[in-house]
Image (tube, rainbow, N blue to C red; front, side):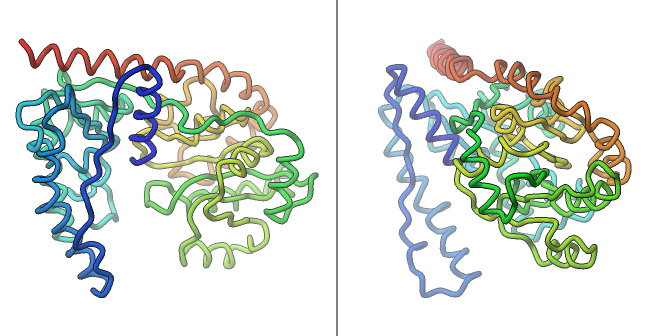
Length: 359
């Protein structure tokens, strides 16, 4: 969310708009002598008791207020009667708190917080949804809210492009691979919907196919969970799956550029930035046959069922020779997410919101 806010500030400033990002001060959250769980609750004093008064004072002389994260929807009241926009990135936490996703459990206080967020979001007059999938989810949560929503896709948050051979070789070497080694790439954190254990299971089956018997898998993102480490060992894939934690944008660009394909079988997403990042680097994309992945990837991906590792691996093996053809299609798809288009839509929305509030 910070990257998103920084992106908007940078691009809107470049077009002559005066943009200021407001961060409520951290007061009690700085007190580090509290134990872990208590530290979290102390931080809520900053967020829910001190921040509203600070924000009300800071937004007095603004033309339009943009709350960049729907989880801060309770701050909408701080805007009073000023023109306000809020971005809804996804409703995964809201739905999880309502028990919609099997096996995902949210604690009592988490359920209360998500109900508060949903109730606050439902009262917003102008909402940006980052995908049609998020817009549909919001409509299912609050029937009739669609006229108050606008879909504006993200553009790339970093200038990804095909890396040169030196950068690719260097990234492979840092991952313990030789220049000749072939690998698949997964990018993501450890949130349940990223399906990282599912990535490993698909790869386990895929390695049985002759075409992929020598292929490695690099998983870039957050450090593995205990469950992932156990599976890697028990499946005999230790040494075949490579963990690359907290990689830089430069290294990630090189990994995208050197891989056979991005393997991105998320079960849920709000947008799915790695799909565009991969396509910008000329990397073929293998992703889930579910929105928003189908929405973002367009016709430039191989779509698989993330819940069926056996069939997913078979489909990848069947279409292995087709993967290189997705590179050109990926570059074409990226034109739908051009930076100037995105920023123009935000500028138009802000003006529309300001004009509507003057009526």
